[in-house]
Length: 168
Image 1 (cartoon, rainbow, N blue to C red):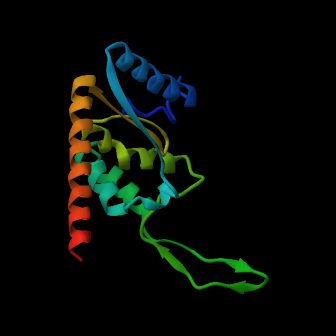
Image 2: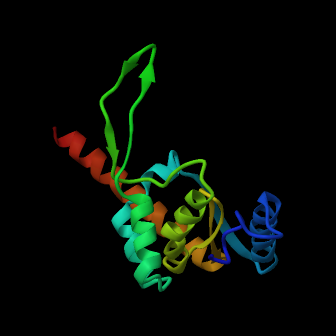
Image 3: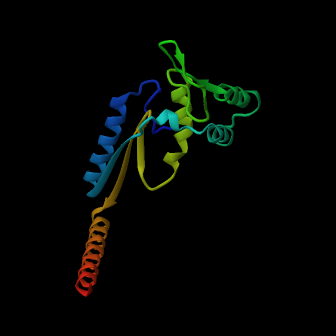
């Protein structure tokens, strides 16, 4: 389980996740850095898990092999559902992605599925299940440079727009 995940871990909670992000913001401010925080909440997150990709990651990143991997493959495959309402039954829909919701394994499989996200990008991530805080800090000089570059690009684009509209 990634150290940046606070869900489903002993002695961790939503408070742990919030405290970690808040502490990172304070440390950056103490060092004179500028921070950008993006809070992400995936809609229907457990429904987005691709079975083949999850099994591949389980094998390559976490070393699951043999009968254990086969057990997970069996657990995820050949799942379907249909709705019965007032004596009428819908057609059967086969589930090709998602992890079973309401199960003990569902959240853990989702975390395995998203575990490698924290290893990439120059962003500090901290999660509680499918809720993620993405934090990026910059030195104030670098921020000023980026801000200046953005302003110059904005002014150039406005100049081009004005020039193009006057020729029309």
